[in-house]
Length: 206
Image 1 (cartoon, rainbow, N blue to C red):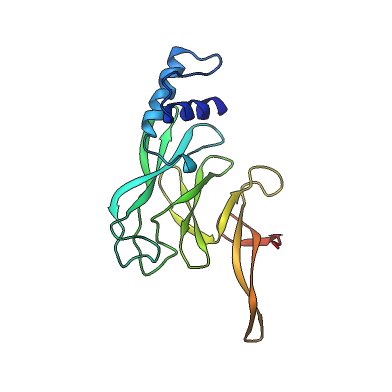
Image 2 (spheres, helix red, strand yellow; image 1 turned 90 degrees about the vertical axis):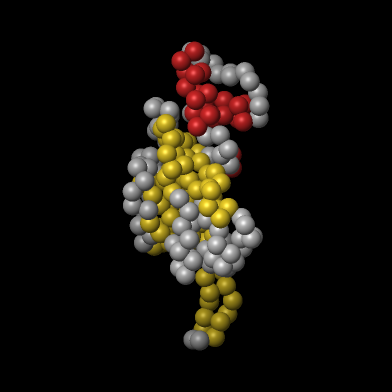
């Protein structure tokens, strides 16, 4: 896995020589083909699945964000979309297209980021901008089915091992009240099931 990602870095930075220990010509050819498939990807949002079969990445779409759709987008700005490449077959496909459901920010998908695979490599989680004080977390199966909103939050992490393997951690912005009187807000990490059901407080933040 590290070798593949190192080669990506070399190729994306314009270094022509493909280096990896114990490479074969066929392996080099496959790595170059995958790098070509992920051309124009945002390197900050390029991730390989735990089983090394998939590489998910974000790139600009051909769709312009409606001017009245979202508070942070600039006029004429193009939305991002998620693609996925099959490293075994060296093919790629569009996984998540932009969604301009402008009246429901939990469904708006114009800037997917922080992509993370589930431990079994069958699900891809990602964040989007949503509310002023919070982002939204979504999930989609790697075959493109079952795109769904999971929960509000940011700083997404998918638990890869241990007791809570397969669950997710998200930071949520919440408010304190005494009766109807607001007492301020706080941002803590919470543990959730893959469907967004809260399990417990994970960590209090200062």
